[in-house]
Length: 255
Image (cartoon, rainbow, N blue to C red; front, side, top):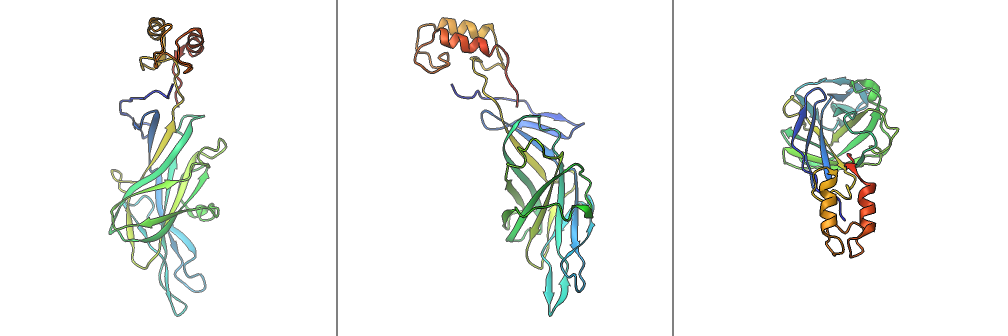
């Protein structure tokens, strides 16, 4: 028997800034709003041209993103790299994460190559201390002329039970002309986390609980080859299926 389809009403939990929305069958998507954001800039001077220097535009409505440029050994333009942090505490403990996507939009969109770096920290306040937290792994980005973007991030670190509470990502784009990540409250980037929901074997009427209503349906199908009530898939509804149902009696598991 396949995983049950889950139908959730959209619920806004303002205290957490958490939105739960329907996803594809059997999954739940949690939308996590941006916690803090800022722009990393380079020093713009010799000999540290294009190196890390300071964090600016903290929680500004627009975050510049571009590469550094040099000419004849001199800096012609500073690098700008947005930093975004997200509070992951709204993800249920023990839930399995199927996918993670960073979504948002840009003003003055440009095409070009770039990357998204990800790290995990016990704090989410942006600052220069974040400059050296990233490892060598990153996700390549092919920025297009579209204002909207959606970046798929690897899930391995997100599923690590020992990861820290906050995720921080650093976004880059090459070239001397800037594009800008929209960061105002109503258009700030969002982290879309898709959770795998455990199957609820025995919930034959899909009401979120294995109870007497499901038992009545199974008994009515006794001795038949009814696909819905044949929980072990052996071609007949019998005591084996009854045992499975009783073993799952009660509320269905949650992510």
